[in-house]
Structures are given as structure tokens and as C-alpha cells.
Image: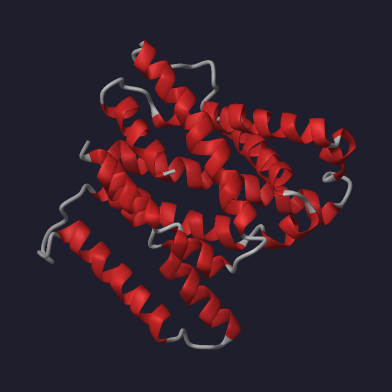
Length: 249
């Protein structure tokens, strides 16, 4: 996902694409791809998720508050700032997840978890202020959307664990993306395009859909079936490093 942020920055800042169009086309296309894969595997199972009231409420909430919220807030943070800043702010989520699990379990985090939370907060403080508490080194909107992205990623990581226990990842993510894309279409229809279309722009959009959405989102949720949410979110912290590295290339 780190590389997709850098590619999105290229589309926003150099090709003048809007984050709204990129979000809606990304969700609809990636959702269609994943649901097509699920349909080939077991076409009856694709629709069974809607037979149970609990399941369809869960997938609706996941699609809107998880998938759509995560996609839009991240791209909005890039649009108002840059990929590296947006990604670092988004990965405050491990600290949020650790704090939430500690409160829910009524058990304070251990020393390593506490150190991780403190380092995340300190790193974010230095990022947004450059050490000067009287000013922000990034725009208020970039900061707002970056923090919103961290909250969305925490929800995206914690919420779907029960539904993932009942349904395969490809089906859960596919419906989540499709729901998010359809809902956002009412705000920004996919046929209202913007930006300068070139071969590079076309390849960038394709890269974001496949390499930046279908593959990483599937792998991220699939890993939740084998690891704890806090472990998955911490491993995912390699993304800010890759984004910062790619931004300097």
C-alpha cells in the first residue's frame, strides 16, 4: 500500500486528478474483481452473505465506515499534503488499537506496547510541528484527514474479525469495496472524471487498483485470521518507511 500512496500523489499533484474520482473508481473496480474471483470459486456463497441479518448489517458497516472511510481519508490527506505525511499519520492506528484493546480488556499495555504508543505520538508530534509547538509544518486539512485515516484504519482492522470468521477474505473485502463504491457514487459519480489522461496516468490508476488495492487489502485482512489485530497493525508499520523511500526516488 505504501507505493500506492506515492502513485496517488503523482495523480493528484501532477495529473490533477481528484481524490473523489480515484476513490470511487478504485473501490468499484477492485470490488468487482474480487467478487468475480469469489463467484468463480463458489457462486452460491457470494449471495449467501445477505441471507443473515447480522452479516449484511456487518458488511454494510464495514463497507462504509471501514473500507470507504479508509480509502477517502487517506487519499484526501495525500491531496492536501503528501504521501509520506499521510502514511505516517495513518499509522498512528497501532497506538489507537493498542489503547482500545487495553481499555476493552481492562488490562494496561505491556512495556513494549507502551513504548510503541509513546514513540508513535512523539513521531507524529515531530512530523506535524518540526519541534516547534507554536506552528504546524503541514496544513490543518492534511493533519485532519491523516488523523481521520488513522481512526478509519483502526476500525478497518478491529471490526471485521467476526465476519471474517464466517466468510472468506475475498468475499468480505469484495463486498466491502463494492458497497463503499456504490455509496460514494451518490456523492461523486464515477463518470464525472477529472485529470490529464496520459499513458503514465492510465498505468498509475491501474497500478493503484491492482497493486495498491486488490492485493494488499486482501493480504491485510487475510492475516487477521492468523495474527492478532495489534500484531497486524504493527507489522503494517513498514508502509510509512516504504512510502518515504519511494517519495525520494
